[in-house]
Image (cartoon, rainbow, N blue to C red):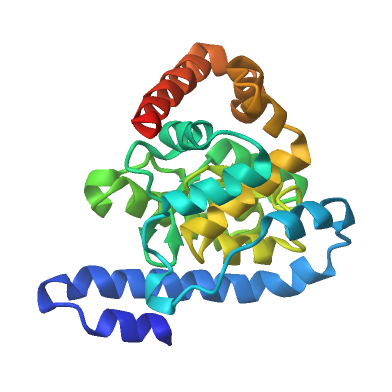
Amino acid sequence: MNLIVNFAAVKHKSETMNMCSIRLAFWLAATLFTINAMAQSQNVNVLKYKLITDTLRMMPEVPENDRYTRITDEDYEQVASELGVEVAAVKAVVDIEAGRAHEGFYEPGLPIINFDMTMFRKFARKKGVNLSSYTKSHQALFSRLNARRHGSTQAAQYVRFRAACSIDSIAAIEGTFWGMFQIGGFNWKICGCSSITEFIERMSFSEREQLELFAAFLKSTGMDKYLRAKNWSAFARRYNGTQYARRGYHTRLAAAYRRHSKKISK
């Protein structure tokens, strides 16, 4: 309901795009309702991450209209302090994962995503879903990402993601990378969430919540120590995968850190 009120005040020339955003946001909410029963029934052990999450999740009350405003330097400072790392190191990760714009949302309520077809196949297969039977009925899912046709890369990503959700919502969410830190949906428990529903709700709430999820993820996996030591190769190997060197992830991370460190020291 609040989303409708927020969009009602926009100018006529943007109504088409905003109505599309409203439909997408309501679709995401509806998807959460459909997976909630399954998610709640999962036997999840979150006690291991409870202390980490309770310590890090210190988000203050945020006015509804300010939820999607850009993350502040104070936000970075608070979470970096909890992790014991430099703000420049956290901002460097965002540079690589979300670009220098540091945007966590495609539209209000819709986090930036990277739907990974390979990961979706993996999780669908584990659930006994035969994707080959959907090639004709779900052509958007199996077609190449078409940003020109859908207006933007993120719009095209959501088209594929929605198609995947219509087959298996949980496999689609687990096979997608979320927010400004591009955390895989399959890591929802490691982020300290009690269900995959909570993971999506927090990812969709604000950039600050995305930052909190990132912090909990680092603490749970022990990756914070590598970021603290500025051991870029060790961090990159664990955060980006074994092929990190081919992508130059560690060198780009180091360069981004130096850039932000210089800005902060001025």
